[in-house]
Length: 307
Image (cartoon, rainbow, N blue to C red):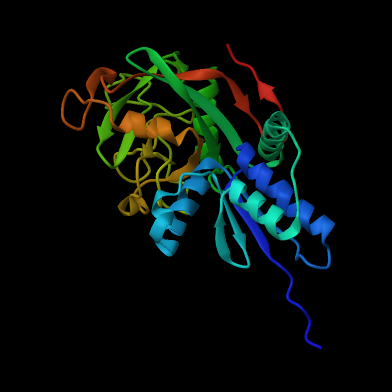
């Protein structure tokens, strides 16, 4: 007698979104309730950058109505896209008489706890910055730094975010606090980090005026890639950029070392800001200031408060 094929449920979604955890819990509950009917569910939690990239790939692959897909979770049954968490629950009720009675507030707490643990358990460094347009705060960007791939570059960026390092040349504090984005390349990237003049012609690293290109292992394959701006080979200082879309021609020219994990919508807003002089925005016209929020997340540690 042929063995009956087990039902395969797969859930991929934004790991800090409650909708993802509704679907995750449903998939796991079905396996527990019907162990002989279901295969182990495949659960894939993603940070925002990775989710955006995954969603774009799925839209290209599946096409059709998926082009307008707006949910932050995708549920599959036997390889077929079912939809979001609501569609999964409807299917589970109709096919397996499964009901979920957990309150929304519980899923909110679960998602927050899962997100915090994910960051703490990561081997990467996380830092975050407040940004403002014309002195009006618009939100916070959280960066994941690939410190295992580019440790020296990541440490430079982390130290400039946190502040406290003094320049041996001028004695000034080396920090991104109150610095501005001085350049916007439409559909390319936004650039900032000139902590010396603020105009895009200066900068200084914690290692000296400049330091070498560490490697080109991370590709500029989507929106939200964080990299070091330079004036040629081995000329990294403090200036950095964040891509607004894939920029593959930078792959062997600039060192990418991290991603924007959350609030990618802020990049869309920043990328649509008016420019006072073509692509260049002297004095921070497009984005008035880049301010460090009072916190830095270390792997395996807690929140380090900075004033």
